[in-house]
Amino acid sequence: MFSRLERKIAFRYLGAKKRGFGSVISWVSLIGITLGVATLIVVMSVMGGFHDTLLGRIVGMNGHVVVYHQDGAISDFDFLIEKMKQNKVLSARATGIVPIAEGQVMATANGNNTGAMIRGIRMGDLAAKTQTGTRIYGKDLSAISDGELVAGASLTRALHVTMGDKISLVSASGATPTPFGTMPRIMSYPVMSSFFMGMYEYDSGYIFMPLETAQKYLNIGNGATHIDVFLSDPEDTTAVVDALSRLLPDGFVVRDWRDLNRGFVGALQVESNVMFLILLLIVIVAAFNIVSSLVMLVKDKNKDIAVLRTFGVSRKSMMKIFILSGTSIGVIGAFFGTILGVLVAVYIEPIRQFFQWLTGRDLFPAELYYLSELPSKLVLTDVLGIAIIAILLAFLATLYPAWKAANTDPVEVLRNE
Image 1 (cartoon, one colour):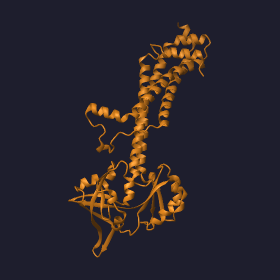
Image 2 (cartoon, rainbow, N blue to C red):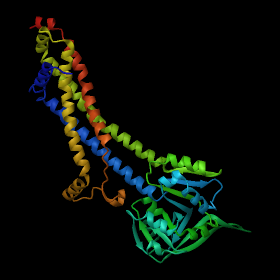
Image 3 (cartoon, rainbow, N blue to C red):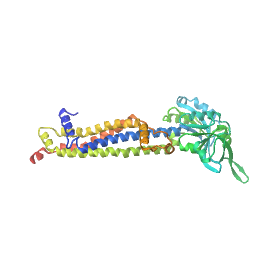
Image 4 (tube, helix red, strand yellow):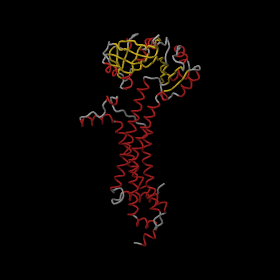
């Protein structure tokens, strides 16, 4: 692609102290590309880590695919669950199928009140879903019996209740009609356990209870409000949704976790894209510095270019010389930036702890971000993509100066010497 002469001249210009690699502008370009690539890799890795961690916790307690009935409670859910388990598509992908009885309530205790979501679930299913990353206080989940509650730790603090204290639940669901109007259903239950998941939505707004307790409270008989289907691969929902749509009779609605959390997933994606575009500006600015450096190099080497053209060097060769010279800065910057970015992304948590120790301040408070450590997820395609974009921008930055060098008129330049 590049002849020996072209490479020799390009690297000679690149090493020139006045306008080449040794110049201040070229160093600024190199450092800018290095820092830009490294920053992009680190930020995209942290954003990916946040995305996976938050979605894992949000979706972890909800089904990856959820089945509703448009008319309300599902009365024959045991039969439907057995039917689902016999389906080939579901049996190959599903790790659990769980009936849920859910409703909104007002929780009150000690003169305090707050809105909450009650979720009736078999305690064995709840214990299976809270094995990783969730702290349980009080009574063991397997020992929770009919009429007892498991509430979020933040919710119990807001209501000032301790283990064994009762919480009154007020709900319009299952309300009792009277001659004086409809009376909301009010029942009191003792809180025997609390949980801390690290997600504010759950810790401050969810109350779990045995399925039979929720069925009686919500007045839905032996039914369930919906059925959660958990998959081995949360991304592989399309085939399951299609299979359930064909399997279930009319009246059932099937939704996956993307539909149910569309706003949250969309916000994470938009934030990730915006951060990428903003940080990409660093690389773009560095690429513009390459333009400045090469334009001045062309002006400084104007006489040399004219002499080379006189000796028979073609316009195409002149363009290739300056393209190689400028792109080399992008390649070197992308190489070192990739190494730096990968190292920082891999050791982001120790780095955070070091700066936290150095400054004496909590740089990532768990009570604010609801995560005990800074997550990071390196994706090879993202790393390679960022490096390639940096090199491509550096290449594009060389086109104008290379074209200007190729179009230098040797007769005009030498006449003025």
